[in-house]
Length: 229
Image (tube, rainbow, N blue to C red; front, side):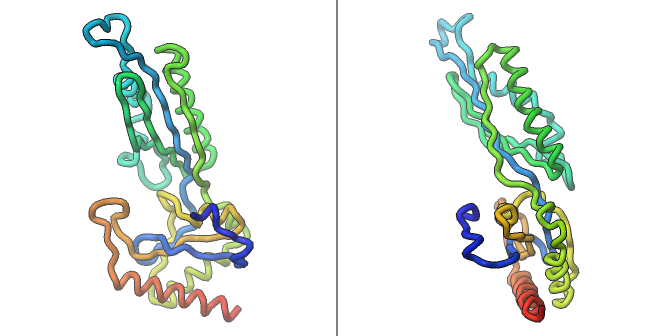
């Protein structure tokens, strides 16, 4: 658990996580991230006598889900485009619980996304009655890019370590996050280096031994370079 990591005891000026994908990846920019839970309250009544009484939370959940933009989901965005991702839905007649993750690289757009979904809950309550829906948003991690201002030598060392291993560096923004993002905000700048993994979080995830060997060469080169300094 990175939030329990004792940075002071660790005693390093900076570090690297080995949590990247394809060979050559070097990342020091990631999503700003939050989780949102929307709860919708219904009213269960015997279906044979429900006329004018029943409030089906499952049907209301479907209504709410349609209020968020369909073109701002993981499967419709790329690069620096943010999104809302519906990750879980549990519902019955009495209550529905909708879980989202909210992502954006840009801090201002990230804040706007949180305000947007909160506004949709308010709009929903105006339509279906005050207290029908409620939302809770919890921040998860922040874009670590700003933690490297004036510290780009950390990136330069890793980039040169790759070149010395005959690997072409691919500096890019992560469409996700790493433990290094939170560690960076805890005072330990911590960019991310490739480990060779492909197709993360899916049934076809794999890593090639040759890719892991190249990752080892890079971290050995980093150790040698820092020792010389």
